[in-house]
Image 1 (cartoon, helix red, strand yellow):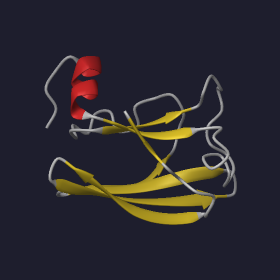
Image 2 (cartoon, one colour):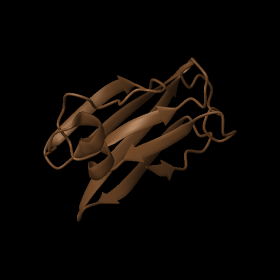
Image 3 (tube, helix red, strand yellow):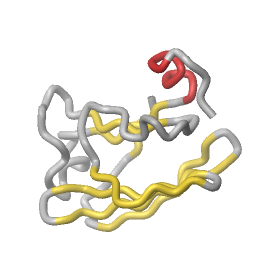
Image 4 (cartoon, helix red, strand yellow):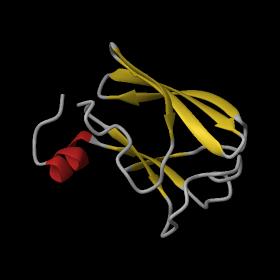
Amino acid sequence: MTKIDIDNSPSQEFTIPFEGKLIFITLEFRLDYWLIDLTYKEKTLKGLKLSSNVLMLQGINLPFDIMIDGKNSCLDPYTTESFSDNSFDFLLVTREELQEVRKFEVE
């Protein structure tokens, strides 16, 4: 897993190189939760709420996933500082790690 650094800005956009392609991510903070928009190749997800300790993109069959490590907390990221103060980690799960968990080939 690769940790992606998220600062305390309530609106962020970034691009992650992945296997010769690009993952486009937008994060928006609302009142007490984070939303993610994600585009990879021809697939786009919009307005997915970030939740801790689950594979966020399960069922979409992308060659990666996003996981929010709550570091033994049962809470979801709930402030703009949730990532910058290291309460939570935003992780990119690689193809190999994902296949090990799911027990089948992905995209």
